[in-house]
Image 1 (cartoon, rainbow, N blue to C red):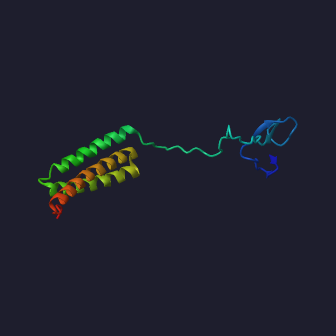
Image 2: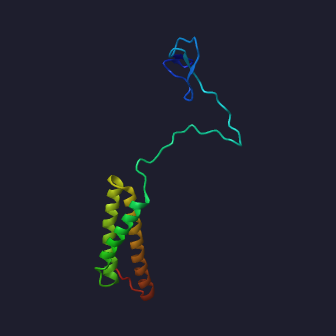
Length: 146
């Protein structure tokens, strides 16, 4: 195969083999010819010649919802172990830390949708605990975690 780019080099990326009788370099009766370039217009812009990358394992709504519910139940069960605000907050912090470790493992080797659900539920649980602590601190002036 011979082209203007040298032997063995097929030429521009958008070209292709077209039938050109009498040319001896390619398949019988075929010759490599670059594709015609049509200048883009403002009304109909040309299609970009960039590759399209697709996610091999996309995040779906089902695993996100299932993991969100499971992590919310996990935080609720640990939160119910607390007798007062101080112990509730500490149980929620510990349960959330464990849940975040699970989310990191899921994101690395498991289902990333489930990792997203666990992360969302953990952040909401920590937000509820932080709000309760902040309200107690603002109303009484006493920091309840120590």
